[in-house]
Image (cartoon, rainbow, N blue to C red; front, side, top):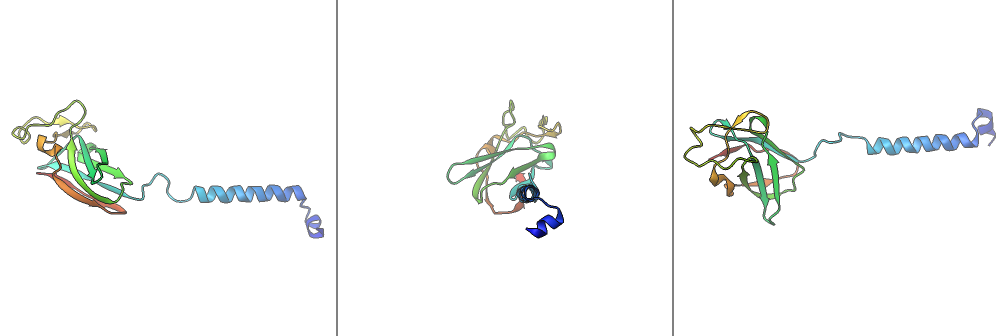
Length: 147
C-alpha cells in the first residue's frame, strides 16, 4: 500500500487502468486477423469456347443443398466459405434471360452479363448437372469450360 501511495496512484486509478487494459485486450483479440476475408473459397472463370458465360454457377450437394454464385465480369464467379464435399455442377441463366438453344450459342448474338461485359448465356443442357467437383478446405480455383 505504501508503494501505491509513493507512486501517487490511487485505488480508483488502478481500477480504471485495469478496465482499460481488459477492454484493449478484448478488442485486440476480437479484431485481430483479416476480417471479411473468407478462409475457404472456390472461384474461377466460366467459358464456352473462348467466350465468358453469364448467369449463375450452381453447386448441388448430395443432400440436395444448393449454392448459387453469380457470374461476373469476364465470366468470373466465387463461392465464399462453401462446405467441403462432393457437388454436381450446373448453370442457371441470368434473370430475364433464358437458356440458349444449343444450335445458336456459337454464332448467336451474345447477351449482357451482370458486369456489362459481353457474355453468352449457358445452353439448355447446362441446366442439368454436367460435372462433379470435390470441394476441399482452403482456397481453390475451379475454371469451368462448358462442353
